[in-house]
Image 1: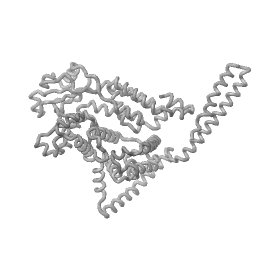
Image 2 (image 1 turned 45 degrees about the horizontal axis):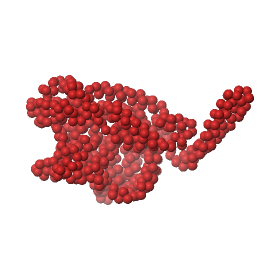
Image 3 (image 1 turned 45 degrees about the vertical axis):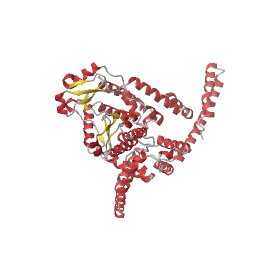
Image 4 (image 1 turned 120 degrees about the horizontal axis):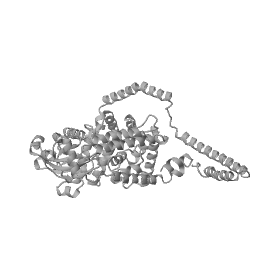
Length: 537
């Protein structure tokens, strides 16, 4: 990879290095996938984290890394017992009436066991059957060691301009480190579980575990056992008299309620974290359905900050009304696009996407000529690769959540369309925004005043960019012409170097035959470059 991506472009063979680049990236991602699975620990989490960074890595890599499953060999029970007793400050036999030594699940950072609280602790907690999540022994030291190595690699990467111009590698490592430390802090996960329960308690469709705080520490988490029918068990779901298509619709509704309601959402809705519980007749009447959807594992939660919530609202209205300009403006308002981005190209592409596919469902999209998708996909990818943009971590969690949601809902209902789930929210926002003529006029006036109020700040920002020499203007046609001129100059220089080396070798040959032969042989390199490379159309 280094040979193709660094060495060849440096000697003018960029077009040659671009051949087969997608295939090489897929192979590299597959190699890292296998390495991370073998090493376990933080490397699996790193692969999963980078699979969400579509602003940094190409699709060929993120798709391959997205398949990383967080599974690991179980830790021997005696090690689990020792760590749990040390953390809880008491023997397991005193804290729990029973504790299953065989884990329900084992992951890279911890593993989960079924247990039953002692009668005294059960009276305090209010429940008896529990699941106990215990850290893998020594995982804290492993995380810090791996992060230290990643920091060194990140700083080394920043020496290469093609990386430093696009990626803040040290910043990515620090963000990954912050998330990883939170995942191994079970007090944080317990607080997330309590907050989720508080904010979802009014929704009878949603179930959740309760935390046994007296038996919870940073390294041990004890929760009420809420396991039931797994959401991926379609046969079990149907056997319980539950319609999987209805589950898909309600699950999407729950996640979007979290995103556009309180803004605190479950950012890891994969099949292992969701259960379906059949309800008795009384509770079914209260919930309006004969089942309850239970969320577990609150180590990865997202929070939509106010600024991002406003941008999402604008984006939803833009999608619902098929307004490409408004969608791009919403992207810029939440700082997805840097000031130097050429938003004109992006607007044209988004408008074309809306015109061609905006009103279609998945069933209709299946009959569209694939070449249209390929062409627009290639344009969008090339534009994103060339455009200066960045994605806040909160926004990446939203993308990851919606992506997992879409895949899970389609596994429940092959005809599920994520846009059908989004449409009611977009419609409601458009209706809320409508109002009467007076309200619309007032909103236009406020918008105009906001633009006027921001003009001094924007002007000051532009002046600062000019003073620092950071202001750039996008001129695609001129840039293409300049690249052609640069290639022509490069070929001319190669031709001059070829002639100089060849003549020098001929003149030196009678005096110093070995050196003359070397010079004449080396002259073939600039000759090849002048004849075959740098002449792209």
